[in-house]
Length: 250
Length: 250
DNA sequence: CACCAGTCTGTGATTTCCCTGAGAAATACA
DNA sequence: TGTATTTCTCAGGGAAATCACAGACTGGTG
Image (tube, rainbow over all chains, first blue to last red; front, side, top):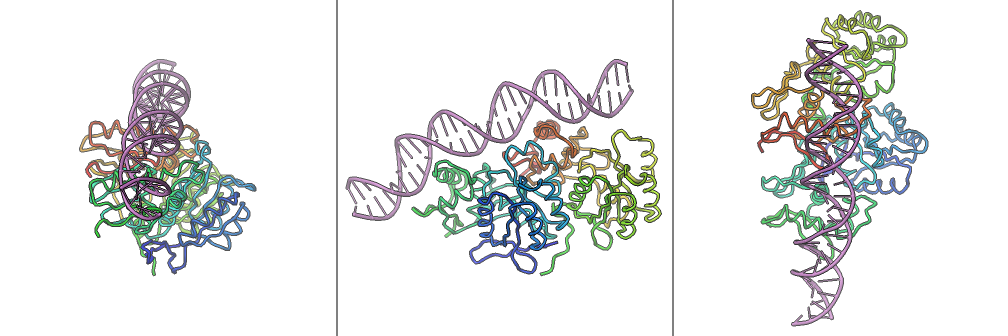
């Protein structure tokens, strides 16, 4: 079993690494090329090493020689049932955590036992932040070490707990909606870095979002109301460039 | 870097360990592959080391070299009678506790005699919480585990005794039905952590449950009525994410 | 100083999600 | 066997979240 550890990059981003210091390996399995491309790009950006497969057979083969630390597995594959793939994967890699991708309406159908072994799932269409966050959680928990602090993001006097979904500033608890939470998480995982509205839209909203681009402005406005209200502001606008978050004190 | 030794499981719960610090070993015996897979996944997630067998012969063989601390044994095996398997198991491992899996309509008298020796049983279809809880109890009582951890879960002023099935808040005794009890146990074993409805369903309801997902909402509602009624609430909803329990004061 | 692109935010429609009452079905128990 | 309890379905109500739209505002620029 892999024991992930964390290091902090010069930019202030924490990365998951394997015990020997090599990058975490993730296998992405989906028959839609656009999905594997999208995921590969996003996960590579996390500093992870990615391999992808388009069907069950390829997944097993790749898993055998690539020996990933985690697998992203679409339940709807052309050549075999998702559960079959899972079974064979488990035979190759008994302890590897799996993040399932399922259609929205398949959830009700019953994905019995999928999360029972500590695995997790997200529904299509997903947001990249969601996938990354879940994967990080799975990889973190799959290791022998469990440092609770790893699930807490801190910027200045603002903290965000990814396990309990709790957010607080200067000790005051703050209630956020799901979207607000993901937006803030994205900002806090990239402190002091300007994020464009396009980047935010691509990461926080699901990939099929077809709405107006100013939802980002709207949700930034919501966040400010809850986080910066009456305090030294932490969320800043860079006109024509985007937004960034940083500790309040100069 | 060396993987640090830990006494907490991936879930952050306290873990059962053998006197020498190695993980507890459990042998799972069932002829249905889906059952052994499901159990292996769930028990591995408890931090235990799992081996499985599909018939009596394989069970004896595996037991001989694996020397498990506990056995999960289906009474209905293709090659030999459950009692025969039990007898031979006992010859190999005289003191190992056994958790029997039986069909609902199986003769209860036979089982009743068997459990007199400190063993236990659950009926198919079972819930994973049930199996895990019983196994923990067996292992704890057998003395194979390092620590004699007590069987009482405490979150704030709420206590739940896994042995006596007694629940109380602020001293007041609370009567719960079986399902309510298991749901509360699952929540209390994961305090301050958001648990999705899918996770809860996978863990607390039996693996063949095909009903509506809103039973979870319903039972959360029941629990609230009994536990949070007129008090500071401990069970919280994270809209779009799940539920969590935490001490009332913050 | 006036303009404009870019940004902020109030209002309200729509959708999604959650809660819970009522009662049917299943189960346990006497 | 009859009764009590428990489990679960169904459906309505309601609250919260999401988002479109539009008008107000702001900072930079000519």
